[in-house]
Every structure is written in C-alpha cells, then in structure tokens.
Image 1 (cartoon, rainbow, N blue to C red):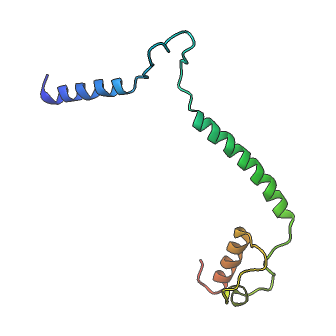
Image 2 (tube, helix red, strand yellow):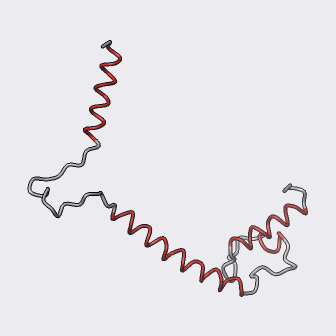
Image 3 (spheres, rainbow, N blue to C red):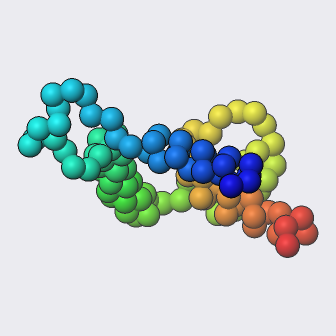
Length: 109
C-alpha cells in the first residue's frame, strides 16, 4: 500500500472505533439498551409541542381582538415620540402598519 492508502485506512479504523458505544463493566447484561435514547431531545420535542399548542390557542384569542393601532394613525403620530404605547402592539400588526406607510412613501417595493 502507498502512504495515502495507509493514512485513509488509519482514519477509517479510528472513525469506526470512535463510533462504538462504550458499555461499562457489568452493564452488558440482558437489560442493556440496544439503542441510544436521547432523553434531552425527547424532552425538548415534548416541550416544543406544548409550546406550539399553547401558542395556537393564544393566536386564536388574539385574532378575535380588535387591532391595537388606530386605522387612521400616521407614522408621526405613532412613532414620532419615544413615549411607550398604552398597550402592547402585536408584531404582525406593527409590521403591516410600517409596510403600508413605506409603500405609500415609495420606500418599500
């Protein structure tokens, strides 16, 4: 074998060795799991599903509410000062407002 073939052989054997699951002594009995279970990933997926489910119900409740931004609001009346809004404005509503303003001013195409 030439030198490059020996290097690739060495790297393949080190990869296959590093991918083996190490089992501590005495744990190789009949109760040893045959497959790795990523408990962190399972918990993350469960938490994400709960979060998505809660967000969907929140979104449905928000869709029923009246818009927070007055229909005749202008950019200056809404954003001309650094005073906080009386109540939180949903991001989607603010984005729609800004896109409409920028479109009217020719800044958004």
